[in-house]
Image (tube, rainbow, N blue to C red; front, side, top):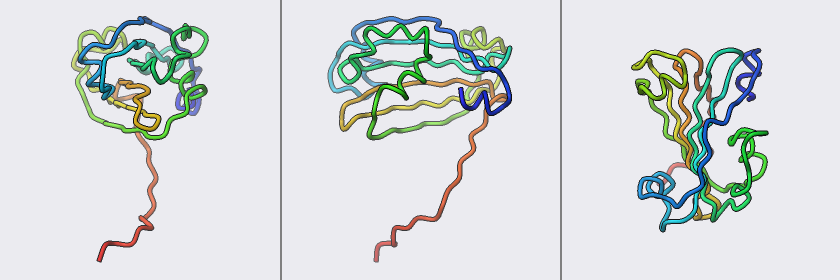
Length: 157
């Protein structure tokens, strides 16, 4: 929402699907779960004005986020809801370029093979996995901007 509003465009989101189920082996690997458990799998489309901006493909571990079991994600996008309801202690990002799959090209209304920026994010509370999300953006609509400072940790001697 904030990125889109910062672009001077109107933001909206649309829930594409919401499924509650037991985690699969792939889900467990994505979330780094130790054992199978109940999850919610949510797919959401984020819009920047009239342009399809991002596909949010999210797994939520109901062991660590039990309130998600009854959340419809229709009033607030999964991203917004998670930020406002779930405290976390650590996160991990994996960022890469990827050609749009047929499925994501259709969702984003771009040509299959169009370059996309993909961000995979995992979050934990302590050692308990909270969520795994894959955010897929058409490359012409999103860029990462980061600011860094020198480390204050003295080098080992």
